[in-house]
Figure (tube, rainbow, N blue to C red):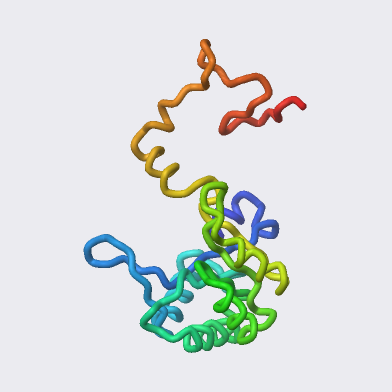
Length: 184
């Protein structure tokens, strides 16, 4: 990744962010592992794969019911102090977890990434806590989530045409990949 950023000449304009704590199961599903050993290894693996010495923003993927939050926060603090990441964030955290992380990590905690979209708005309390604490809220699946993804994979979005008789985009709209701005 860093090589591509250098090749494109944009490395100094890109904030490199990634996550850790989500793992694949033998059956191909997903699970969580927030053990200190796994989180340290995840950071080291990301550094190696990305080809960088420090990750600007490293986010913890989701709470792990097998590991106490205090232990996870201690590990995140240790990772920040190691210099391997500049800032940390949380994903899928509730207001209490966000407040506890802010108390434990201070200014090292800069963001929270929870699901939020026109269809899924239950993260409003987390957005309010982020605003109170001065943290960035980064919505995941802001365009609707699983329904959109499954429709894309099934081909229904690829084959969809604009609802005009000629099959072209309505006046003033913008298609994917278009460099033209819509007329106002």
